[in-house]
Image (cartoon, rainbow, N blue to C red; front, side, top):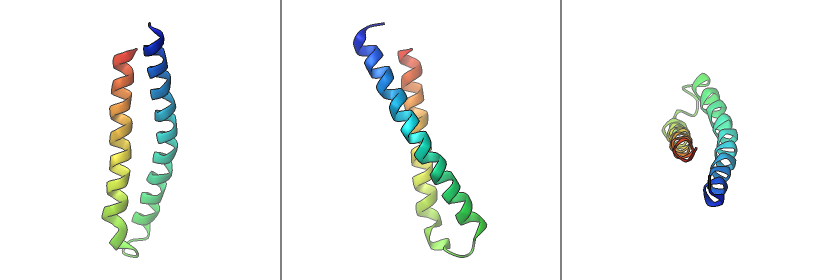
Length: 69
C-alpha cells in the first residue's frame, strides 16, 4: 500500500469516527423529538433530513475506505 493511500485511508477513518460521534447525537435528538411529538413537529423534517444526510455521508465514506483497503 502506498503512503498516499495509507494517508487517505487514515483520513477517511478519522472523518468517519468524527461523523459517527455527531451522527449518534443526531440520532438521539431525532429520537427525543419523535418521543415528544406533536410538540416541535415543525422541526421534524429538518432534523430528519440532517440525520439522513450524515448517515448517508458515513455510508459513502465507508465504501470509499473499503475500496482503498
